[in-house]
Length: 405
Image (cartoon, rainbow, N blue to C red; front, side):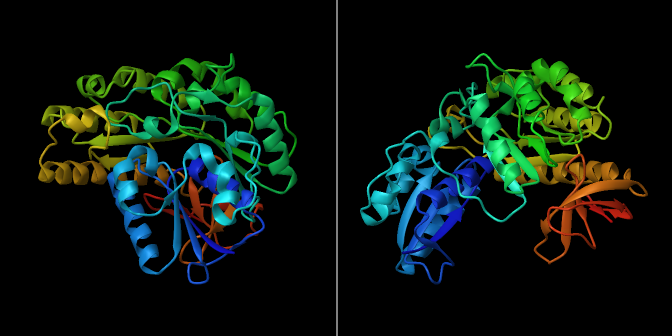
């Protein structure tokens, strides 16, 4: 059977797609044109992504393909999912895929972390370390899909890393809905886990996934010393979402602006630390003053990367009951913040011009140019190097999104 696998969303979804490929290993994963079956591993965190997924499913149906929908969309927006008129597989039922596809016996193992995972030819390996979170954010639908925190055992994660290093992976993403709360349900912690991962021998680099500020603040003291190991990217992703304490309270985010700023200050103690954050503009209760507060916090903390999302209500969330702000305000605030953040990113990257950096060659851009990652996960445009090789380069230029060797 020829299968086309279409994946959307976060690193966990990408890891899930590798599980799907392994479970259905006897089949041929191929291009859309050659496929009889299309499996859509969906994301619905944002309305725009949800629309893209729905449009893709409709397109595949028009092409006469057998379409199977899985991932987060069926749990986040079951009404839309059912309206698409395709087969739906729940997140907890991936073990049934052999039976669903062609009537083969389902796998006896149901636990997703114990299911096999396909090893692709890229230099990057993904290790989910937990699923779910401890938050109750008013705007977020992910909890409807992934549930409460469930941390995976340390020994399983270490075993997975050893396997990935053995088969030649050089870049390892440890990921979760919130890596910062890892272990709180199993008497462990993210720093304890990372310390054990760094005991694994080999030449590789680990990137820690997103951690919410309240947990990042608590673990920063124990996490900071571990960045002295060059195999740990000097990079953290700490979402602020709003620079107004009033709006953060309305969002039911369990931290303050001051907590975020203190946490950023702590991580900046590490040389060349790169910090990414997320912002939501035009949350329904955000006033003009609240928005300006967000702009001021960004000016003070200067995140290297800022992911900006316009607020859109998601199904079955508290914020969906609030009256949204006019679309013109969404557009104006998004544009204004984007301009500021591009300038901050450019200024940060220009500081590296003239410096020599060691980079891991990770692949090619869509234009065919080699690209790599520096020690702090900044993307670097390269002129030479082999995939998976560590190369030393001198930075000659910069843009808001990358360094140029």
